[in-house]
Image 1 (cartoon, rainbow over the protein chains, first blue to last red):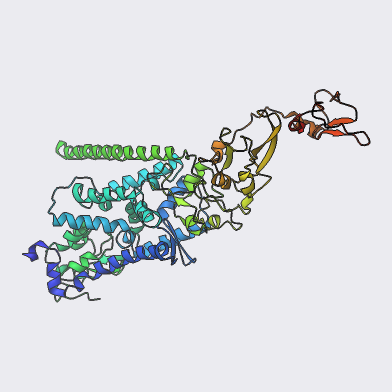
Image 2: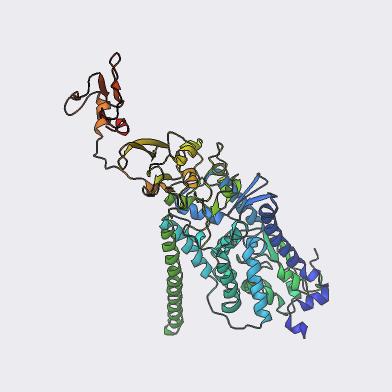
Amino acid sequence: MSLSLRPGAEAIAAKGWLAAHKWLILRRSSQLGILLLFLVGPWFGLWIVKGNLSFSYTLDFLPLTDPYVILQSMLAKQLPERLALTGAAIVLAFYLLVGGRSYCSWVCPVNLLTDAAYWLRVRLGLKGSAHISRPTRYWMLGMTLVVAAATGSIAWEMVNPVSMMHRGLFFGLGLAWAVVLAVFLFDLFVMRHGWCGHLCPVGAFYSLIGKLSLLRVKLPARAACNDCMDCFAVCPEPQVIRPALKAIDGTPPLILEANCTNCGRCIDVCSKDVFAFGTRFNTTVVPLTGVPHAAPK
Amino acid sequence: MDNENKPSAAARRQFLADTARMACGVGLLGLGVGLYARHARALPPAAIRPPGALAEADFSAACIRCGMCVRDCPFNILHLAKPEEPLSTGTPYFVARQLPCEMCEDIPCVKACPTGALDHSLKDINKSKMGLAVLVDHETCLNFLGLRCDICYRVCPVIDKAITLDPQTNARTGRHTLFIPTVHSDHCTGCGKCEKACPTEVASIKVFPLAMAKGHLSSHYRLGWVEKEKAGSSLVAPDVEHQYNLPEGMKYESGKGLSGSPGAVPPAPTPPGPVGLPRAKQGNQL
């Protein structure tokens, strides 16, 4: 029963619980660890990191700036000082290496929330979902940039649930909790993967960086796929898997879609070890004969 | 040919309809966000920006809401605006009546700002223009009532420049002087210490954002006394020495008041004989 109900059950049986949750555990550690790094300052006066995801200064040495907010600022006709620009360059370079939307799955605090909403949605067996197409997020992205230029202010930051939540956790939430709760309830009751998968312009921005990024999920053993569909069930952006898995139009065994968040959950739940992290180069396919464990770490 | 065209025409229709739907939906949201942002530019009177903050329109484009200024303020006076507060979400401000700016000489908040929303060219905290103190309520100000409260004047970090006590006749008693706290905008930094220290239940002197507090004289106005000083002499008609009708041995000097001339017998201060002017009227106001 559990085999048919819970995606990943087969992988747990084949690889053991730990191996079937490896990337999930690492990812949650990363998300919570980053939150903790920011929190030990205000909580214990231990200032390893100051600021928030818009700009942070680590050990008074490493500036990290959100390039999206800098882009809005520049469209509103303000050129930031060098420190902010340096931080933005570092962040851009980093996500060019590890995949733009890695931000979404490894860093963003809202992901914890929307993942929880999705988990609860599945648990409660909520089936219906409003339909908005996934590219809506690019319209949202465009809208925020147009509004920044038109109003001459970083207008989106006034309502952005992502920065509102992150900032609120360290500087005081106020009514931001209501906005955060609204996103959670929207994902839970209104739309499957609604915020992160369809609407969030921050994710849309990072996906554009991800178009060129180096780190990718590869499918070195795609021939071993037994069509269990577990990867589709756990993937927050399932549309990115199909072309690479089914070699549609000769797609190499490599997920090049910009919206893959590099969460690695597909690697976890695949009992046949079809998936693995790798670079966008070197797309050799393990031949069908003698597959099963072609891509150990 | 018809068969080939039909599906593509339908697809085109669908595409256009989808695009219009998306543009309208997202556009509506964008309109809301834009209007909200415009509203937030009207800074509420009690919210004072940190030192060196650009003018509000530029500030809302340059501040990325990172809170570095909040963190580096050694006195923890700064907050980031919460979504329900009536100024741009996430931007820094302080409320003078709660905790005024302590005017650190090294201005750590400005140094911490990564974008320059707090202008890095501000090196002297006494040159900052966070706002402007205004003695808003003449009816409750204790000095206006005739007391020597003087607290705003005493606590001012730019004492005797930003706030001076200007003597005026107390017309109610006819014999006392009011020391009117007078704010001078070219020296006031808007730190808010006066507002914080004002002893009335609700502060009688308050700091407002500069744009709200400051008037502006029309450009065609000329101040006669300034012009006179510039020209070296009166531009209109030559000044006539005023002839005072004074008791013997007394003289009156503009700006100094009455005095007995040396050598002359000072007039006896006998109560029944009302000699000279009431003391209160001997100030420079006459």
